[in-house]
Length: 70
Image 1: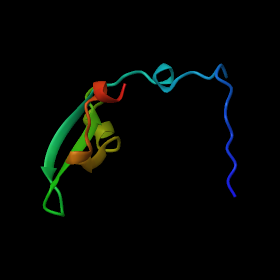
Image 2: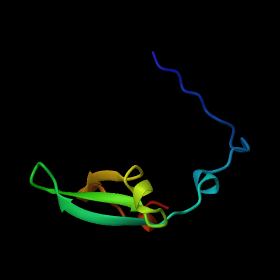
Image 3: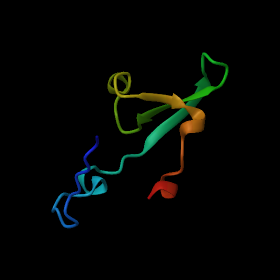
Image 4: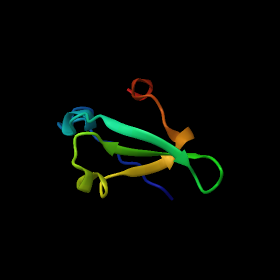
């Protein structure tokens, strides 16, 4: 049995784009272990030692244009 909870239309919570500043990420493509490609994403405004701990790897075919999801 599932229950559904709906928030009021005007709940006063900020939208995600209001909470987070838009950051430009650098994308580098590299071979993946499965023979495909993976994309490494990291902020371009961080020093090298911070980039080493603040990166994300995703399958290259999972990337989408930002404008297509807005």
